[in-house]
Length: 76
Image 1 (cartoon, rainbow, N blue to C red):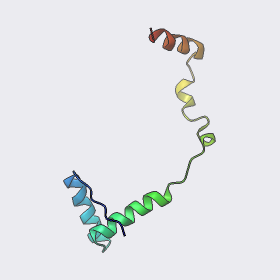
Image 2: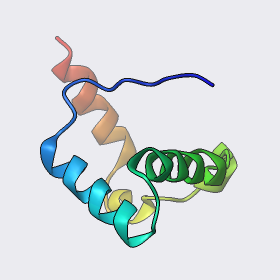
Image 3: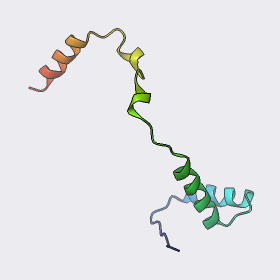
Image 4: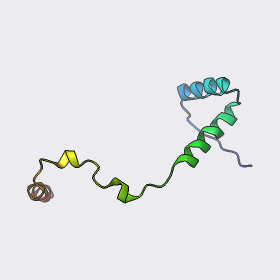
């Protein structure tokens, strides 16, 4: 099995991990492995198509041509 060393680990985060490990009756190493495994395994790829329409309310009252012209003018 591989070994992982983490430098400059924040003290407060370390304390939270220790407390959580105690509550879960795990060692600190077991708790970190559990959390990392859960995070990696639960992340599913997101299709760009699922993002369609997100944020449309932000652009609802914006004139697209005017916005693009203003952006292009700011490049000079």
